[in-house]
Length: 500
Ligand SMILES: Nc1ncnc2c1ncn2[C@@H]1O[C@H](COP(=O)(O)OP(=O)(O)OP(=O)(O)O)[C@@H](O)[C@H]1O
Ligand SMILES: [Mg+2]
Ligand SMILES: [Zn+2]
Image (cartoon, rainbow, N blue to C red):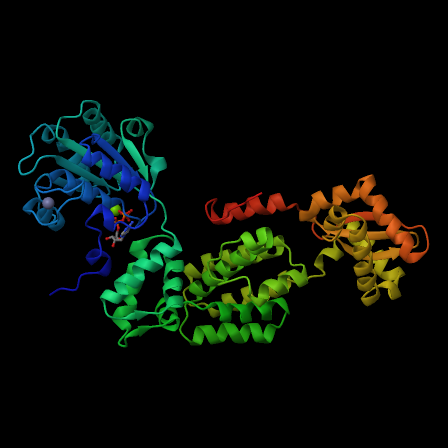
């Protein structure tokens, strides 16, 4: 018997088998039950999320000889024929093929002919966005005067390419990317049926790679099963098959970049290539890893990671300590994306990779921002450093702790604001306190008289003299909003969730 791909074997046959898409499934099931089907549907959403599968379930449900509570029986001859693709009244048209266009042309006459075999003719038009203008018009005419006993189901991954005139004549349902958990659950079920144990972190890794599409997830599992002879699938097995490098490897590689260790960085690169990783894949994985770091940098614990497993990852703490800015990470991602692009045209070019990685070493040099001309904050920081050498370092840290403690005694909200700042130093009669750009709100509140007075009183108590407080912004001149916009440009709105 020919081998049937897992994703085909596991095509859902009942509404109840469909993973996720609850609202859509409930609405359709209800319509079938109450005999209130519409003449035309538009299913839109990312690939491999169930559009064609649900369309076929609908086709069966309306033609089944023994339906039960809206579900098809999957046993009568109609159901069996539809599952096999040999039912005369369920017509699948692939709009992407030339034949598809001819079929739509012929469709206007054919739809008038009553169902031959079943109760309802169902036209499933896949990749509907590929229809030509001419085909859309032909379809539109039909939708304007829908013949009885005909249902059209249009499915598309590119809803923006469907004309408004079509939208307005269809009932539309959006299919969503499946969640990581939903995919993990189904993967485990499938693995179990194949009599293999899929370890938890292996399932998570596959799901991450599938990016919300169940077909892709099942295809990855399929590939692994082909290579795999044992009964257990570990994370390493997944990594081997996908040719990806894991979180630990990326941690080490990135750390060597952060500390500007050229030798180590090149060593990691060579190791990955020797182990058979594709250059492009490596660049892609590192970009995805940096994407995680960028999100963490922007929205902290609200970030949803693709590669990093949890907030315990030591590199996240390192980034904080180094005051790495989103802009630095973005520049690095940009460089990697350019490199990935170049690699497409020069397969396996190790030299390109080496240059790119060495260039990365410069991106995370944390003193860079102080060198910029015209940057007032940097000038202040420098002045403070030069003139109060002994007040710098440890002494400053101790003083800052004492200041925060005293402020807290006086007013907790003021402490909450101030604690996001850092004492850069005290020069003559002025204390300079820096805030990172994202803490504009904190800086502005601290500039208000009430809060400033509290701080200046504390300074006077601690240092026995009148000291003014001055607040300024640390590091980049770019605001975080700019960075967020850039990040959206790179990754698409749905990946980045910005919560206030
Ligand atoms: N929501 C889902 N529930 C259960 N299985 C699913 C689901 N989505 C996808 N699958 C699995 O993926 C396979 C392909 O799904 P389907 O053809 O329905 O996706 P699609 O949305 O039509 O994708 P495309 O846009 O690429 O045509 C199914 O046979 C099934 O194994
Ligand atoms: Mg499909
Ligand atoms: Zn049936």
